[in-house]
Structures are given as structure tokens and as C-alpha cells.
Image (cartoon, rainbow, N blue to C red; front, side, top):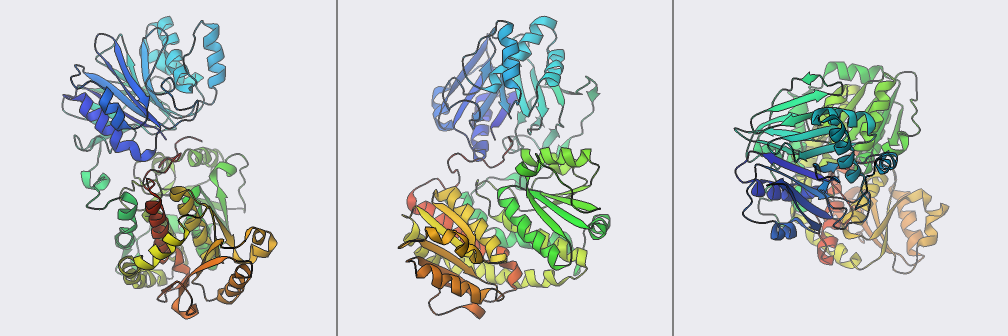
Length: 592
């Protein structure tokens, strides 16, 4: 969840590192720092924004090497001592780290026995001192890194400076993402390609349990046994990872309004001449399985609930698991299960943990991800890309719709019933209409609820799944406490929370559940709730707040999600909060 950048041999390292940190700030952070070599290792770091760091880092830096970091606190509070980069006791090793060292307390006790002391509370400082300990014993920096890989348990992406090798940078990777950018007489590292794309289109993606050495003209990578690994260059273009706002005030708004083109791109990618183009082997595996498991987190978990229902309607048995729970109590229902993992970033630590268990049990897996070349994309048996384009805002919008859309297409392809293709094409004009004509009505609701502390969403079936995602979006960015409740569960406890003027937002887009949902509305209104209804024409009443034209009800999370996303967006803007970078959250959850 932290961001790493580094360069070697680049003519203006300050420009690259500081601007690179800005590029990665969508990942979430609370402090930032840089380190470079100039007659010794120099470090500048502080709590707060990268803009503040820009003020304290000297303009005229003479160096060939620099590393930088944005920290999202895991070990220790946000303060200067815990901010990266971290330097070892004898000033030999300085590093930046993304990940979590699970056995850091044991390693710390070992280092204390070797007369090391510590200035902060982070697991990262322990790593710097462990590398130094082995280096001072062996006088071989690469061998020291290899030894550390056998000692450290957990996840790490590390960019390292050694004061004895001011013309070289060292790297280690396990579980957390780290990418090398190849230049002409210079080289970069970063957590992803976005900081480097202005300067190079050639990248090396590291696998887990790899380490290496970078100079301005060369890259050497080794596996855990010390064997040199040949790495291929991967080409990426600037359009595929552009962070341009294109005139929008915020990324969240821009990304909501990219939903129609995201759906079109999925149709263009996975449909040709009215037929699906999915890998036939993948489709056969899904058809032959007697149970389909979904494993995901957060927004992706909500999309798995929708996708699971799609497969169930075609007669498939399914289960849906939260990755962080399943990883510690894994089960494989059925005699021939097939596992679908869903991750926007492809680097979600909880899912990577799950994938290791899946592989240990010799099961095949499919990843749905927005990030080609990511850890999950490379290591799952099959991969389907979302083709949503980069999503910068921490709160996922277009990637969620891409997940639900792709799952609808995939389930339809397995059933060999291309009805979904027609239905998706039919709803595109309706989504455009919502985005162009419905904003005033959405803003009315936003202004009515913006000062509330608590709020509830109600829905049944597909509308309940939509309610869960709508509730998550609102709490993520506006900090209003929100819960999604299945309409039928009201009387089983939650209705006790309804009091005078409690806001309740209700989705009624499924004609199968419209009548009981109207009963639920009467129940909360009788307790004083202020109800706001979003309904489709066939089930609407004249008192409903927003009425949407009819569409195939199973596509509610594709169509009406835009209303939910706009509502969260407008409430947050009205409250004056940073809608793209909500507090305490990170875009890519690379630590468990």
C-alpha cells in the first residue's frame, strides 16, 4: 500500500523521484521521504504530503542514485522516525519498503542480541539492519540479500542503497509489486509503471523471491538460490496508464463517466460477430466443474456476489468467499471445483495468499483483473483483463462495473446463450442518459443526506448486492456510517436502528421483489425514516425520487451503480473532503 520509486543514472533524479511519488499518491499514504548518495547517504523525510517534501528536498542535488517512498502506516504511528527511507545502525544500508514483515519481532530480538538498536517502530528498519548485519559479516551485498530472503517472512518490495556501492541499487521482491524501467544510460524502479512511463516504454516485472543489482546500464536478477534469471522486456504505452484528468475536477467523476466506454471495450474484446471469444479451454473447465468458487475483497467481493448469482441462474453451484477469511480456513466445496479470483490491481495481498493455497492443492484458477502483468495475472492458470483503463481514485467505480459486466459475459458464454450481449448493448444509451440527465435529482438526495451521521440502503436480490456496493462507496469517501440491509432482514434486528429522520435509500429495480420492498418502505416510514427511492418505470410510484427506464433487471449493478457512485461523489464534494484520496485507505491493498 506504500509507493516506491528510484532511479540510477538519470540526469534529474529529484524530478523523477518527487514527481514519481506524486504519481503514486493514489495508492494512499501519510508520510514521504527520499534518500540519495553524495559523499554519504542523505535522507529527507517528513509526515504529510509529497508537496511538503518538495519544499524540504534541496533543488540542486548532485547524485547518480535516489530512492523515494510514500508510507501508509502499518507498524508505528505516522511520525518522522517511522517514515521511510530507513537507514541501518552503521549507515551502510538505506532502503524503502512496501509490504509487511510478519516475523519482524523475532528478527528484531536477534538483531538486539547482536547489539543493534532502533530509532522507530517499523518492520522496515529491522530489514535495513538485517541486511547490514549479513553484509558486515560476509562482505558480499548480494549474498546478504539472498540470506535475508530465507530469514524474512511476509511481503516486501525493497529498493536499497549501500554506501559502499554508490553507483549501484539493489532490489528484493516477495509478495509486493516492484517494476524496473529500462532507459538508455539510466534505469528506474517503482511500485508500478506509472512514474516511469514518461521516460521509457520498456519494463521488467519481477517475480516473488527474486533479488538483484541495478546499475545505470545493466540489470541483474537472481532467484532465491542465487541463480541468475533471464528477464524479458515488456512494452507498455503511455495511453494505457495515463493519469490525465482530461478536464475533470476529480478522478472519481472522470472514472464514473468512463463506464460506458469500459462496457463497450469489454464487448469489443470478448465478442466478435455476435459470438464469444473466450478461451475454449477455460469455458470447458467452467462447464465441467461441479462448483464455482469466488474469492475476492471489498468491491470485488460485491461483484462476485452478482457474478455468482449469474452462474446460479444457469444451474451452477457457487460459493463466494472474502479472501482474508478464506485464507485462514480454506475449503474446496464439490468434487471438481473451479476458483475465480477478482482483483482490480492484481496485487491484492489477501488474494495472493489464497492463490498459494489453491496451487498447493493443485486446483486451477481464473483471475479477473484490470492489470496485465500483475502478480495474479502472471500466476493464475487463466486470466481475463477488465480493460477499464487505469483507475486512480481509491474508490473503485468503472472497475466494479467492468467486473460485473465481464462476469455476465462469462456466465453467458458458459451457458452458450448470447442474450447478455444484446442486453448490454441495449443498456448503454440508458447509462448515457443517467450520466447526462439524472445528476440534478441525485444532487438533491446528496444535499439532503450530507449532514447525516448514519444511513441505510435497502434492496433484495440483485438490488441488495447493488446496495452493498453503494453503501461501501458512501462510507469510503464521505465517512458517513452506512449499512446495506436485505429488505427481508429488517424485522430480524436492523429495524431497531430506525428512528425519526433516519435516511434510508431503497433500490427497487427487480420486479420480482418490488411488492415486498414496498412493504419494507412502509415499515421504516412508520418508524420515522426519511426514504429515498430509486426505481425502474415498471415498478415505480409517483413519490419515488429517481425513476429509471426499464432494462433487464439482472443488470442493475451495471446500470444503476452510476447513480450510487454519483451520490457518494456529490455528498463528499459537498462536505469538502478529498474524494479521490479518502483517509486511511489505499488503492492497491498489498499488505494483509
